[in-house]
Length: 85
Figure 1: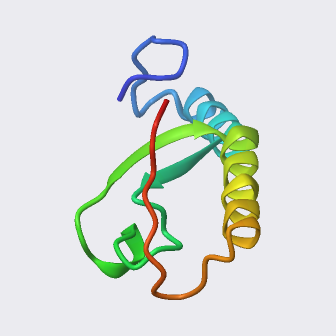
Figure 2: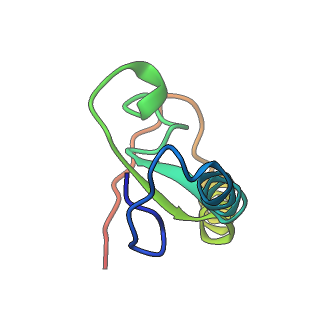
């Protein structure tokens, strides 16, 4: 296992391991593409990409996606494209 600091930890270093886990849980979250909120998303069992990202950025991205759905009146089974700039 490689710690966030880049230093290797061992099983004997329980306190340091717990500290690293606490930091990770609080500040980072798993994010996936395609979005979990779509039929092709991670929650449907298809293939997807997942990465740990900053928790605040993940929540902000989810809120922006929700606003996109509302603004563009995207409802269940509507098709849309995602352009990445």
